[in-house]
Amino acid sequence: MACDTFRDTEVLITGGLGFIGSTLAIRLIDLGAQVTVVDSMIPEYGGNLWNIEPVRDRVRVNIADVRDEHAMKYLLRHQDILFNLAGQTSHLDSMEQPYADLEINARAQLSILEACRRYNPDIKVVFASTRQIYGKPAYLPVDEAHPLHPVDVNGINKLAGEMYHLLYHQVYGIQTSVLRLTNTYGPRMRVVDARQTFLGIWIRRLLEEQPIVVYGTGGQVRDFNYVEDVVDALLVVALAKEANGEIFNLGHDCPVSLRDTAELLIELNGKGTYQLVPFPAERQAIDIGDYYGDFGKIRRCLGWTPSTSLQKGLRHTLEFYERHAAHYWPSAVAV
Ligand SMILES: NC(=O)c1ccc[n+]([C@@H]2O[C@H](COP(=O)([O-])OP(=O)(O)OC[C@H]3O[C@@H](n4cnc5c(N)ncnc54)[C@H](O)[C@@H]3O)[C@@H](O)[C@H]2O)c1
Image (tube, rainbow, N blue to C red; front, side, top):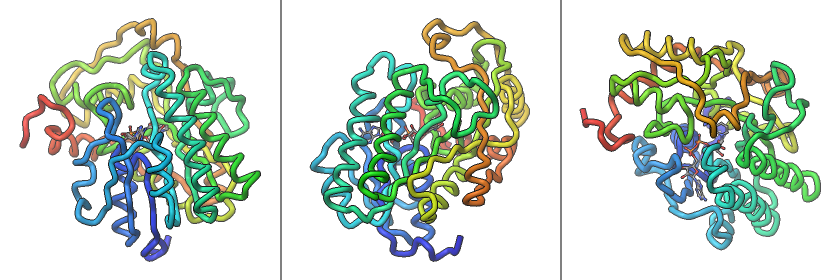
């Protein structure tokens, strides 16, 4: 990617104070884009003002809710690209508070697209969807043609969100693209609890010298993506005309079991333990078993491939939280 490709491009990132959104904002600002982030900063979600610390004087921050149609209408005007990343991400919360998930992950997506259609039809929109919409895999690796059987409310609402994006391309010609993300990790992820990813709470417990808790046998397989690789994919898709109206899986070509992941983390940390415990009933009910994706389509069409090994990505992540823990969980001591 030429380094001035995004220079002076007006970019809006919903969920831009969250994990992936803030990492994307930092990269885009380094590439010369004019970036506005919009985030509701609801405490249970992943937003953290400290996430944008490296660029805080160069980014416009708007604390607003994507459910606020008037705010979104105002914010979307004059933007060249929308990275639409705001979302309720907790699977368990989506079962306990299903209407909040519906409002954010489905209804607000429709109103964002309506605002694009009415006030900025030339905008490019990249939507962050999730592999959760596939449900329990019928085969592995899971490609984009795999049946869609979400196992929780979050999966259903994210599926609606992505279908609205595709529909607005098909019917109104809005340039939309969908990325189905798999488990993403790295600096700036939420580690205070397991709401965003279990890897977050694993890292916190490791650094607090508590055992990592692994549910089930630990044999469950995942294909983790390091956040900078996901940012690469978001940028590549934003630039590619041939990505309009398309869905792309992300993934990694080295799937790994949760047990091996816990062991690797402990090895990188130089100390620590993990324990296998039975799944709590509410988690078991929405568990998807093994998952890894086939990301051949985005590799073939757009040349994206993840370049960060799990070992390297986890090392960077551990180093980040060793230095900055105090900004991510209340009881951590500032260093
Ligand atoms: N991290 C992953 O492993 C993963 C996997 C699959 C899909 N995704 C998707 O990627 C996107 C970004 O996820 P993330 O991991 O950065 O999570 P995150 O929670 O760190 O980021 C989401 C951001 O959206 C904000 N937000 C939530 N509701 C909002 C609202 N109503 N109005 C405005 N802002 C709101 C949150 O405050 C948060 O900052 C999400 O849409 C998520 O579904 C993430």
